[in-house]
Length: 216
Image (tube, rainbow, N blue to C red):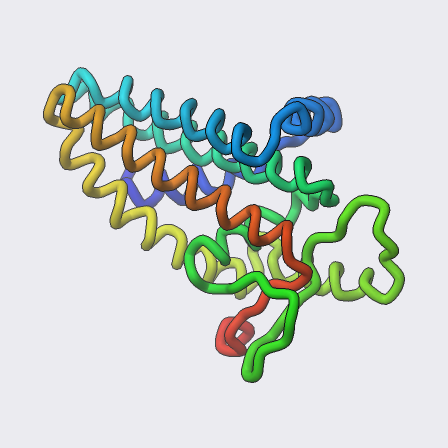
């Protein structure tokens, strides 16, 4: 398996919180924290796993990398949803991760206003807020961001390119005992913290704003 395909597979699975029981458990767990402590908890988990999988170095460190990438993105995905729960937002498990990844990769911005030459879609809705006049916007955003659409494929390509640049560096040092672990932990820190910062922007704003070129 190539690094690029490992990243693509990990991205596809990072949004998976399939059962209602799992979703409720995540919601309850996240709401026992504030934003800062929730982010710190998630970052500590992925950073420690990154360090542990890189400490040995050599073939062992490399063999553990695919699992490390999968855990990093799965934990970061849960971390992102947790941010939404703490902010009191409705979570859309079909499209939210793609919107968050769009912000993280620089494909889109989160905004409460309008920008010329841009396309905007209604995104997060606070639980209990009046949805009148906003339901259609949410449905359009969900359709555009759903996996498999042209827009989501462009987002995926940007995300893979950004992750590939960092994870290539990570793998190149995993041959080196201890140093590989430190580098791995640091890159996991960077990925998770960036994704959860993007999630906070996503859930804290009304609109996701794209360049018109993304829709073509």
